[in-house]
Image (cartoon, rainbow, N blue to C red):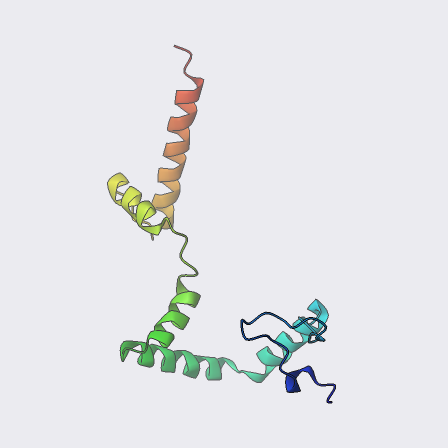
Length: 122
C-alpha cells in the first residue's frame, strides 16, 4: 500500500475521515507561506497583473459571475451586512460616503452631539 495519503480513499461515504487515516501535512508554516508569497509576487509583474485585471473586467462586463465575484472581493471586500444601512444613514445625513472630508466632519459632529447629550446635567 502506498504511503501517499492521496492514493487512499480516506473518507467514508458521508465525507468524514476514516479512523486511523494519516492526514496530510496541513497548512504550511508562516515562514514557508511568506516565502511562497514572495516568489509569487516576483513572478507576476505589474504589467502581468494589469492584463489579468483587464481580462477580469472584460469577463465581468460580459456576464461572467466568477469574474464579478473576484473583482468585487478585491474592490469591495466581503459584505459587512450593514452596508445598506450605512448608506441610508449617509443619505439621511446628506453626506457623500466617498468624500472623506465630509464624512470626517459628519462623524465629528455626531460625536460632539453625543458628548453634549451625555454631559447635559439638566
